[in-house]
Image (cartoon, rainbow, N blue to C red; front, side, top):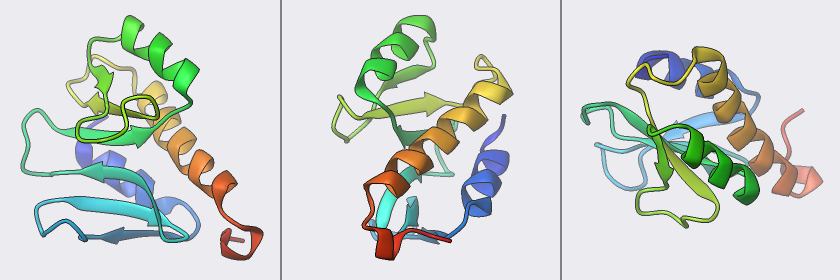
Amino acid sequence: MDLPDAIELCLSFPGAEETTPFGPENLVYKVGGKIFAITDPGEFPPRMNLKCDPNRSITLREEYESITPGYHMNKQHWNTVIFDRSIPNKLAAELIRHSYDLIVASLPKSKRPV
């Protein structure tokens, strides 16, 4: 998966929005006002910070060199996924969805997308 596809997937989720609260170089994807993905399109190789279940984070980092502790994020709950084609597209898409789902589940029912 490449970064434009990852961004397109982020924006395809109900209630997802792209914001730039940290400046124009960082694209931040939110649902219900909470972040589920962050990227800097100018970085090479492209990468995206994604929320992840802490136990799963450890397993993924051990299995894939391109999945590392979240850069500038809580290392227990966030991973940085490097889009260098070493991670299967299906897994990359699943990790983006997992991040979104974790955030939606943490929202009060009144803020959850329909």
